[in-house]
Image (cartoon, rainbow, N blue to C red; front, side, top):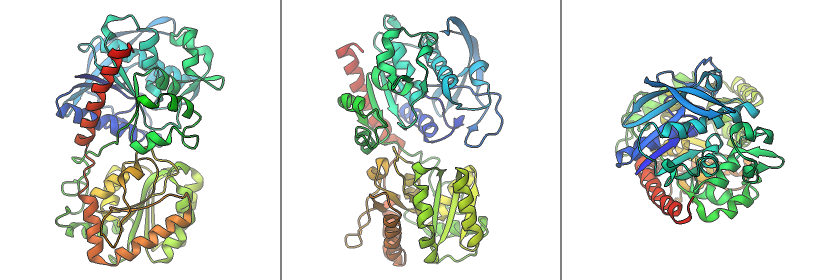
Length: 487
């Protein structure tokens, strides 16, 4: 099966969040199980340091500089670069007008124009890099124009006569709004307006939802949630209408990158069968955060964007109850200035218990996962989440709110049966978060039971190989649906 995966960010070349991780890992896993897969992404240049963006210029070699892209009433051109990442080729659309501004995402109409151009370029490039794709796998609003172009501009192009589209929602909150008057500039007739209109504006996210052959999200629970008013961001009526075409496929973890037995960033290695090295990692983490070395005290950690989505307000409200138990608290992340200032204040108030690092640090994120005992993820919503799966592999017990992929991956530990892999609460409340923390402490100080809980998590399988097989099964179903109904 031939698959093209289009994404606005792809690890290790560009990243602002989990989308980049998925777009980097899934194609490689698909390639390993025999799929013919190619990745297409922008080549961002002119880059200066900006918080939240991670961009590498190591993008292989230029293979041609004359990709013709009909757009904005003219013929525009792009260079195309190619690199190989563990099997699947990655192609980069290089156009300085749209991607030479030193950032991955901007805002407003120009961002919509940038990714409309990218979407059109994906389809033009597909014709030059191989046979007709069976599936074009689109990801989030930045690629929502691709299904719209296929249905309304390329509808009679024989190259795409059998091509189906899968549109994956990584985060429904970001919808790619722009002014409707731009539709002709992007190459659309007004007949597409109803499929994109959203409260007198136009949404690229809605375009993907409306025009794709099928839809998916990054966890089964999130697929259910986004069909409700609470989580649907006002698109829930459309998602309920398309409910029969909506799949929930849980993301995976790259265990070549996230494995305490081989992780190059750790002070010591360990596994479910031999956990001794985790204590050395805990010592190393406390040293890095300049905290007193007391290996008997629990280390509670959080690695996150400091936003309300991640439940940071709950963490802020519960932090003093956590610290009253004598536990350490370690933070790695960045975000709203008010949150950064607050946790810096906590650090200055209790400097022997609290460590903070504001920013992005790949090595340190691995060291936090390995050195911590407990990991907090009290999200208000969480389409999938990856850190809870990293934590499980590293024997670091997650405390999560039961939403989205957190609910799909974490099972509350029961002392009577010794089953479960973490702690989970449902009400969006700092009291419930604190209660689960207290519950975890009762097991933490029972060393034999704590080891059992750690091993339960470390033996879970959330690999990309598992996820890739699920996606391949979905692709086959989607191709069948495309042939049956003609789109």
